[in-house]
Every structure is written in structure tokens, then in C-alpha cells.
Length: 330
Image 1 (cartoon, rainbow, N blue to C red):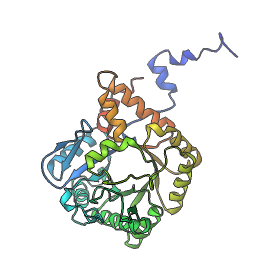
Image 2 (image 1 turned 60 degrees about the vertical axis):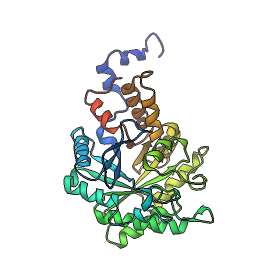
Image 3 (image 1 turned 45 degrees about the vertical axis):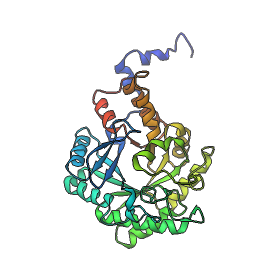
Image 4 (image 1 turned 30 degrees about the horizontal axis):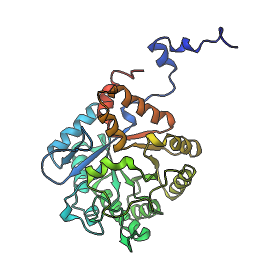
């Protein structure tokens, strides 16, 4: 049947009927909130990411996470920020048991227990003096020696009480190496959320300012994925699943929604995360005054969920959770 008998607008006539037939919903339980932690000092606003901060270990961090829980955000992922004078070629501050991330994990778990689920990024770029994600040999990141340090870092975080580790360096075999290390140390219940399809993207710029993690030479295109490739993402995801990943990820999200859908369609049995990255966040903030930031933000997050993501890592988590208490504005 066709018009005039078929009128799809009947299902858009008012908010009640639109909500009743909506195909996609988001809420605070979908979000993983990225949090930057540092050893000491005051709270610092991140110049490249309005509304985001570097949090020192202590009461201010706990107060902030209490706010997150109060609006329904119960998952965080931690990124360490350290002074330049503790960085070295092997990123030893990343797997120091007394380092900033292990201390943050202990602090958070002591304060919240199982109420707040803690993920921790596993990489070395925040801790190396050259800014690359692993051990550099002959001006290239050496894969096999790097993944051994990732495994050491993951065990350090597990020993501190982390719930999930999240290897983000895009090294071959990183998930298998970490799974073996966790299991051999008795951490069978610590999960792995793999950055399985992480693209070499210019959208990471504001994050690199926030974490002081930009490479001092060259770029990361020899280990992060080529933005021109989509099918390769499915291969990377399936390799990580075979190696023991519990959750897989596509990063960035907004410019790679086709990849999110492709991965979900091909590997539907594995939970899929998508990272709404710093550049995507900061562009929305920079456009304030030209766009309705609230509606655009919720539209973006809905699009990521609609494409197939089960979990969304987003800096918008707290404000989006507050807005969602009033329902979606569509």
C-alpha cells in the first residue's frame, strides 16, 4: 500500500508516540567516563578540552566521582599524567606499583568498592620521554619488547584492584600477552577491553595535550590503523577476540560509524565499545553559540549507539547523564 493510505508521519505526530516506537535509546549506563589523574598539585582545567580536568589524587577526585555516580555514571577509565622528569625511554612510570594509576585505582576502590567500575588504559605514551607507545629501537617501536611491558603494566593495575585493563597501543599480540600474564598471576577475573580498531587519527590532538603524550618524532601510523581501511578492522577485532578480549573497541567513533556498524554486523556476539574521542568532544564545545550543544551532543551519542556500540567512552558522560534525566530531546 502507498500514500494516501500509508502515512509514516502518524508515528512522528507527538513525543509520546515517537518515544514508543524509537529504535535506539541511550542512558548513563552506556557511558565509560575518561578521567585524567596526576600525582599531586591542584585541579587543572585542560586547555584543549573545555570542561575537562587533570585530577590530583585525593579528595577532589573522589568528590568528582561521587558526582558521576550521583547521575548514574558508574564506569570510568583512567589515564595517568606524570611530570616530564619521571619519563624515560621505557615508560617505567607506567608499571611502577607506586605510580599514579595504581594509586588512583586503590583510592577509588577504597572509596567506592564495586559501586564504581574501573577500567585503566594500558599504554606507555604518557610515560615515555619520546612520546611513542612502546620501546623504540632504530627509530621504530619494537612490537615484541613493548607487549611484554604492557603485560607488566596490566598486572600492576590488576594488583591494585582494577576491574578491566584496556590495551590501546595497537601492538600485534598485545591481548594474548596480557591475558597470559594476568592468568599466570591469578587475575583470571580481570577483563580486557581491547582498543582493537584504533585509527591513526588527527582527532586525538586535544587528548595529547591533556596527557602530554604527543610523539617527539615521527607519527604512529606504523602501528595505528590507516583511516582508509574498514575491512581490516574486522580482522583486528577477530584477532583480539581469539586472543582473549572480553570487549572490543573502535576508535574514534564519529568519523568511523561505518566501522562500528561493520564490526557489530560481523562480530555481534562480543560487546562493542566506541570511543567518542577528544577532538570530537572539543569540536562540539568550540561550536557553542552556533549549535545547541545539548541536542547535538545527545544526537552524536545516539548515532554511536545506533551504529552498534554497546558502550560509549565519552568526555560528555556527566553532562549527558544529567541531560538524559529529562529524556531525549528528539
